[in-house]
Image (cartoon, rainbow, N blue to C red; front, side, top):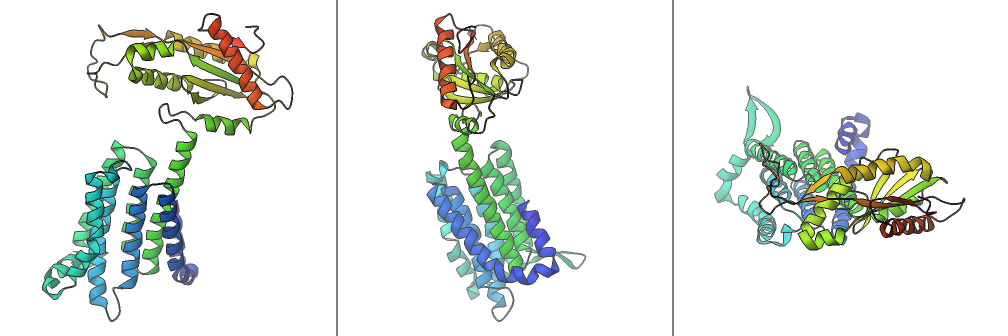
Length: 392
């Protein structure tokens, strides 16, 4: 949507003068703010990507491909068009964790010496190399794109590599790098302010991904994919007067961890989280912490929510968990191998349910009441549902 918006603005004749005036300011604001945010949130991968886009924009602005220094400008443009897609593709194949490894340092070192490589291209003895990099793609005698042939090939390779990386690791950051690469392709095919607008918008896409990733880390549980306890606190503040809270705890979870290890425990948590996402009746599941989950039913009383919770408890009870062996592949094999000899574990949950007794009751009190009902369910045999009044 951001790239589409920029394209529409650039196609409007009435906005061209405003774009020419505001494009440099837009670029400085976006890249400085993005680098500052990336540094503050310790996202070196995005900081380097933003710095690469900013350096490309400033290099082409400092050495335009028209005017008295057109020869230098065309050489700088051809080098930037070749190196920029390769840099973004290399960064896409890294992660925040691998930025500090030898591979990450190698990529960052290669990026740092690129200004020197571009300066060497301006030497008279490398004129033939510079001219080769500037050779454009011609079809029937017509130039179909401003981007030189070698750079266009680099963009094609980079798009394939970045797309493959996104398929293998579907994250917001990987998607943003792919969009930033597309923005670079559009920008390098434009002139002056248009190039700056597209490159800066690519930086804006990276900033949006940083904000979205930070929000997900704060409000989403990485293991189960459910909203986290912080998201539950936020949701409790916006509930209607009538609502029901169910606190759910996995029975004998510590024993399972002790017997089969934490990896098996994580598998159980994922399984329970996946089951909770299918809660009917408008129930919204959350990971509360440890082996405990919460389900909110906005606008429903405990009596109305109880049938859906019973279905949920029975679904979990009917499922059979097979402990993943150390030699089990990550992907399901074809044909499926026999599970004979593997440990089958029955998983059950205990549930405590509560609703506000009167208007104005704080949500924390309702949570505590549901927790007390949950403890009562544990003490009276587990694998059951208890309402806060102890009547069921």
